Length: 266
Image (cartoon, rainbow, N blue to C red; front, side, top):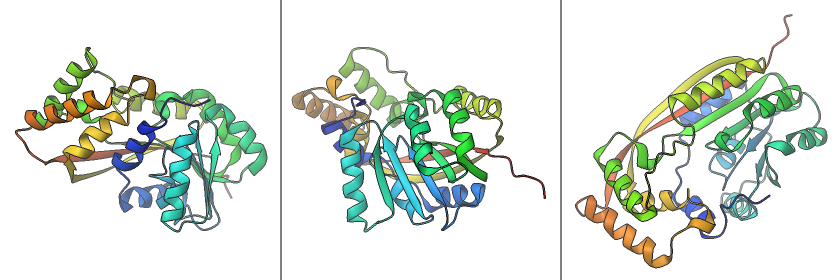
């Protein structure tokens, strides 16, 4: 069941992936009317970047991920944040029906999928979760910016060049953060019978070379992670390509795609 995002990769993920600003949590809460009576499933939760802050807005968050090392770091992050209303479950999208049997029908305020939908069967997932979601709740697919190597900036172009030399091939992965990926999400939500809406939260934030390089390594499966020496060389090459700068400015665009379950007429 493990995803390959284990060991050092999971550590890179915990240390270097961006979290979510309050505006993203506000948008989620508003879209589904989330509050203190709601349970949220965060599917593909990683190391808890969304699960833990979202837990402050609802009764409980169940973080689900196929990688035990990710869940161990998420659990520790929750402890460090004194968050006591999270649970961490080893599983994937195909395990949602079983989780639903445990939680019961119409009991879920929202299912969130943040930067993980490209690993999942959208159509099956969105159909499966619908009977478990309360009226007015739904599904949120979230992209936390686009991959660091595919942004339309000089620093991203320089990073991509270094990365392609490291791996020896063109790097084109979008992780479904592009328009085509969002279109697939929208179409699948509509096919599953949800009411569709979307929102964007955009902000500028510093991106250190350490976080840039760590973000890249957090996206490489453990079995493909370069050696420590090669990673050090890559870091030096990136720094040189950016003229020795310690940080750049990243324009982060968080896309939120909402599928809302039917609210019966009164």
